[in-house]
Amino acid sequence: MTTTNSLVINGGIYYVKDKAISLPPNDGRNYHDERRPVVVLSGPDTNSLAGWPTVLVAPISTSPKLKTQYCVKLGASEGGLPKKCWVRVVAVQPLLKSDLQDRLGVLSAERLEEIQARLSSTWVCTSRAWTTSS
Image 1 (spheres, one colour):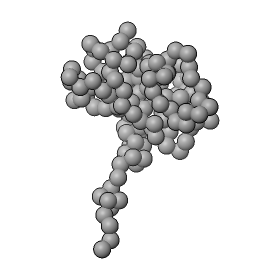
Image 2 (tube, rainbow, N blue to C red):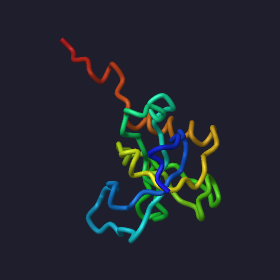
Image 3 (tube, rainbow, N blue to C red):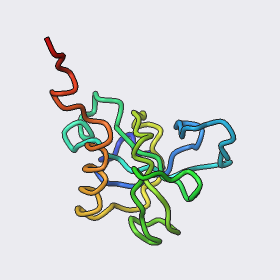
Image 4 (cartoon, helix red, strand yellow):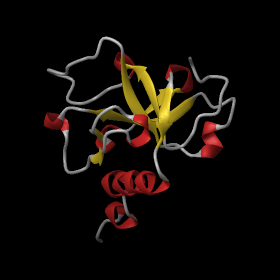
């Protein structure tokens, strides 16, 4: 099942082909033969636009050796996941909607807010970061 003709949900966990995403560090990475879950982080406005081909996703990994302080832990059965894993917030990336496959489930609003807060604290620059002293 692909989702190209169905609504892509913010906070939805979808399977994608593992090679469709980057999961740094890619050296020594264990590629799955089939699929890997991702969580959609882009908002409903862009997700629902038929002419907008991409969504913003964060890969999900079950490997504890890849987790960092920026990852968000998800428990088994959370969002339909079969076992505990980590959302790799630092590996957020655009993905074609046509690459999304089966939806496993949807994260709770609280968990999605936690991921978005971690994303904001990890990647968003404040205006102070762009000023220079005279």
